[in-house]
Image (cartoon, rainbow, N blue to C red; front, side, top):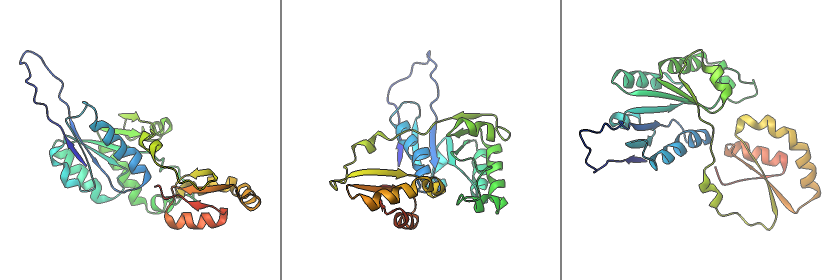
Length: 232
């Protein structure tokens, strides 16, 4: 979305007012991370008076009228090239990250992308060094990324209050939910045997898996005798 805002109020020449920047969130995917780290902050920012305009889009060319570009996890050379171009033309660059990609377990689906294809990691490091600021989801990431950029801000994940008003699927049963992306499958294994035992003995509740890709959810669902949620 694009939420450009202007003010019709006349400003006195005697009063200095702070310049409010316009902010463009360049989204590279439609996953959960992008939603919580880009879409949700952008929408919330558009409700405030902190920015003169807010935009969210996957097409970087639409950022030309904005002052600040926020990019979540740039790992491709074409993304880095655009950020360099934008900075050379006066844009402020903010790199956003919610994962410690320098310390991934081998069972993490992202391990092969970063550890075995070093060019992706190199691009991300260069983007960190290029950025005017970096935002991260945890305080631990500040320590991990501080060697590449000293201007790092801790912005914790927040809940979208809108989801609290979503209608529940009434199956007449108690719903036990587990939510996490594909990188958290190892965590799910901790309760897999327990859930298998409970679902085989009782039929008064549903075990719902949410957050993974459809193929992952179907496979895990069969293993844990669960069903997957339509909410992503």
